[in-house]
Amino acid sequence: MIKFKADCAGVIYDINYVDKNNPQIVDGGEVFNGRVDYEKTNIFVDESLSEDVKKKVILHELIHAYLAEVDPEQNIEAKVKIFTTIFFDLIRHNTEIMEYIAECRLEQNE
Ligand SMILES: [Zn+2]
Image (cartoon, rainbow, N blue to C red):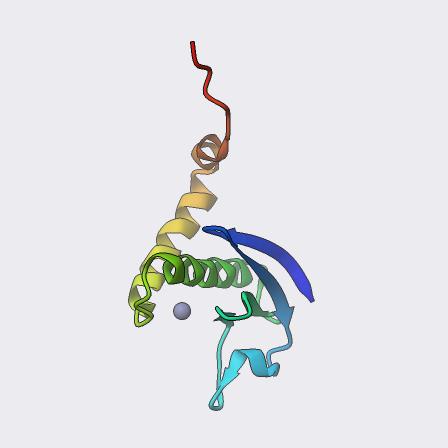
């Protein structure tokens, strides 16, 4: 079930909420809160998580998707965790500034 679409540096990812037993978030017996499939541009999130944890997992997987575009090095889990903490806090606690940054206005040239 596609919940959202995300544009990560021009690559559109479908964000799907799935059952925690869905093979998309199980790997070698290990169950993950979320996974990103770069080839099929899908992000899968365990639907049984709390709303806040789901939001953090979405952010975490989106950061993976962005980094895949700018840095082919995929052994970056620690960096992704740092970015997730920073962005989650930035978005949640600095909403006014985030909305200001998100504003997209054409510059008025004189
Ligand atoms: Zn990760």
